[in-house]
Length: 434
Image 1: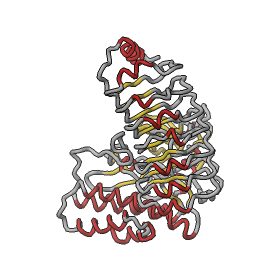
Image 2: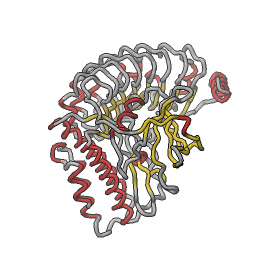
Image 3: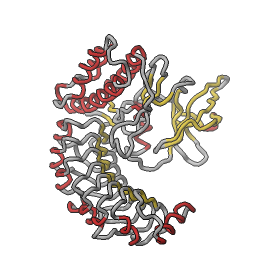
């Protein structure tokens, strides 16, 4: 048990945490729910019990009347605890990697907004899931689902759904009619087609000199590296994958999509895939972006749920804004033409030069192969909404009265409109921006 967790647990048992709004007890070795937690019923808003050995939670969990966020990932819980449904303020629930097989309808709290059930053994979801009108974010990758409840067709506020690595025979017809949906993934299901062929090189790990860590995400770590190929040397970025299921899906599918995307100046595509890593790790060698490029935004917070968090001081000059959104649109139009959906078009996945607006879209963890024909075109319009939201966020951080602002606001409205079929294709968006 980490020292900080040990100290927190001891303080809880002494009664020293009266009035606490947050309680974090990860990896505390708990085999039973500490009854002292109920002493915080009038104030507790966030409870983190991840990484313990809890097999159940109390049926009277509803006594925690102010609880809004509950994290229980990594506990051996086979059934989503029915007591959650009595927590009237609970909006975010996380049970990742628990071995869950059963999700009773009565376990779903009435104010549910964000549900994470990634990496479990769930084969069926209850119809009650679609009767949660606030539902905005639904993480279901890495389960055994063959179908989804049709009641989800009524979830007009659902903006993000992760369905990768399940056993779905097809995507439900209602998915492309959801007016708010902007981010989805389905890689690794039986119906997904083959990714476009890639001619990327196989790069022996011994040809790479590993440099400093540039960044880390849920699927892997990115290092600066030097690639020695014959008599030439090239500075590159090397992403080493952790190999575990992520909320978006399987790292193997991320690598395939990144390679299939091909070369494009507005994508952080791959130069090749490594071979012969001493620990058997998978990895991609990618172009190294210019120094000074940075991430456009931070990932969503507990409060923002499905929307990125921007630096409050960020201001984007009009010329840089135009370059930024054109570059992202160009990268997306290329992906769609290649038969790929990015699935995660967010500011936190965009690297850019704040001075010029030059940008590249990164992170293919949620990418999926599009079906042919009208079905693929409809799914592309989901991603068009994600682009429209990004465009609006950029405009909110620029001068309201520059010459192109009104036209860009019209384009934003066209991209995010509730009628999915009426949204423009990304190729049309790119032409409008060009």
